[in-house]
Length: 294
Image: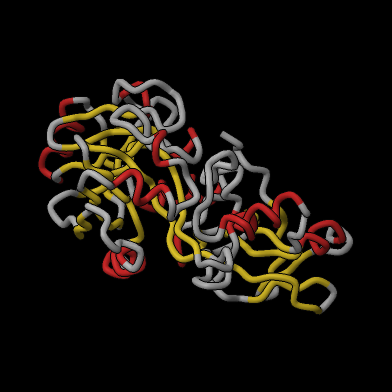
């Protein structure tokens, strides 16, 4: 598979087990947990009652256990935030440290892992699971398993090791946020971060924490800013650097690689900017990147 590569991702894992796992999580997060099976993964978020971002994660299922593929370093915080609602539910939450997360990316990623080229398509593998990224096909696939088992599988499939920067460039080009690198805890809302387009919200499921505010922002069209990908010439711009239009601050640079960044930008500034009236950051002209849109 010459066009397919892999890299280990800096991710954390939380396992939810117990007979009430699905029912318990269903009332908390933005995704329909009942659609998650051994053959289907999903993307979701945990919000505050005011509809503000707390955590995002991919959800898969190994056996009867739900696996939350979350931001590294925030696993215990995620467990704490979920456990507040545990009450008498028959569930256990565990920070899983024996498994690792790998990305397999490239045009033939799903084919190389014998997966259907469908968002979230999953299959169990030795001591773990492989699935197509449930946000965008273009981001490839993920493997959650012990590192040694994953390396053995990838070598058997003749998939070569790539770099995290290669993976991250694809992520940025598809305008996919990476947790708190791109979102503000207790401040960001899901639609600002493209969760609708990334299939992170089930609009037909019942109530969950923050559901009312999320629905209102969609149906009333209340968004004033949005996460977009911007491109420019030169090295990466530091996260937090202001974006200016006509000398006024209209946004902020988020995560970056050389020549490409995510940016939280006011929608009116995007409309007003152009060749004769460019957006700038750190003195560099930036423009909206045309996504691969896969």
